[in-house]
Image 1 (cartoon, rainbow, N blue to C red):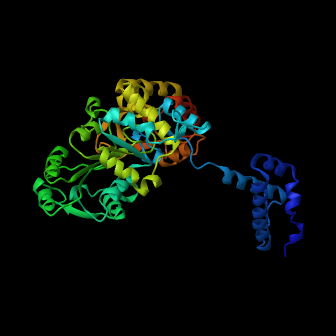
Image 2 (cartoon, rainbow, N blue to C red):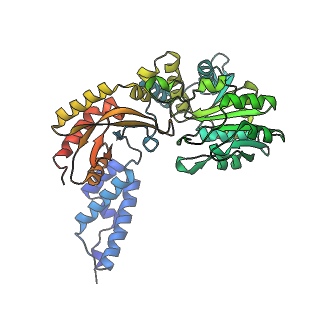
Image 3 (cartoon, rainbow, N blue to C red):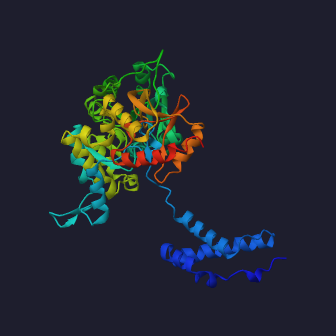
Length: 453
């Protein structure tokens, strides 16, 4: 039978030098909790006859427990996958101006809801609304915390218990099991499906509009393409139809591009400006996808409708905070200055030439002393431009176990996220942030000598 009296007390352990050092690092409350928890686990081990290495092992357990408790789960990584808007890796990295604006909003008090001229309470919507209106040509705008919230707010404010018509080709599901029908059900509107899963005609809409509807919802396909025997009315065609029946036309753009993607050799992605000019009464889109800003949902359109939406109770529940508004404002200013391709990271990545990427791969090979160049494609990601990609060059490294090597990459101080292509581990320079390049090279260099292990 183990002698439990040999176990040190909590007070005795707290006086040990190594534990005193832990108190300095992690605080007395957390350290005391860890001491108690480890003592209890050690007591159970002794009762079960699994006596370990004594006090040294016990203090080591306390140290490991505290480090696990305080280890951040939201960590910076190096994205070498070539997926520009990588949803799992945080989507769009921000420009330096956006980061600085967000830092100032965090560090100091601000005019979030304060009118300096009047010396009284103001509105947080002014910080982005004029910028959005200037860029998109819309009458009014509202920023909420993401695009799902934007769509839910629109439908809740304008179509509760009313019919909303949606094409069957657009009853989409995107990442995280987000489904258009579920959002519509939550809003309280009545979903009316039209057409078939591959063919929808203008007459399908007209037939349902004859019996009345609050709105027609036109949803971006997001992460899939309709090919083969498939068609649906365009947004301008829907605009003509809804005007005849005095019905609202709501466009859920999803990604929200402000720049024509064709200039980069990609398929045309309807821009926010085109959606407004096509006659949509309301348009909603994300801030952290092709716009290249922080997570946000942006609603633009007719002022009378935006005013109604602003008064809905959910508008307060979904409102954007000061950090988002600061970052979004700075991002929008890049567009107004005509510098998006130079300052916004995702557009810099999209615009980067294959020749520049080839030069980067050659430099990597020279510094690492190993690897080969491979031709491939970079993906846009984030539910934007499905099936579209940009020619790129990859650094390819042959290893005995590619999956094991990927695991080792994820265990680095700054984890590197890569992929496997043709049974080799590959790295795409297009998505490696310039400021992380030297760290990337030094970390990969530390592993290549162990690549066969």
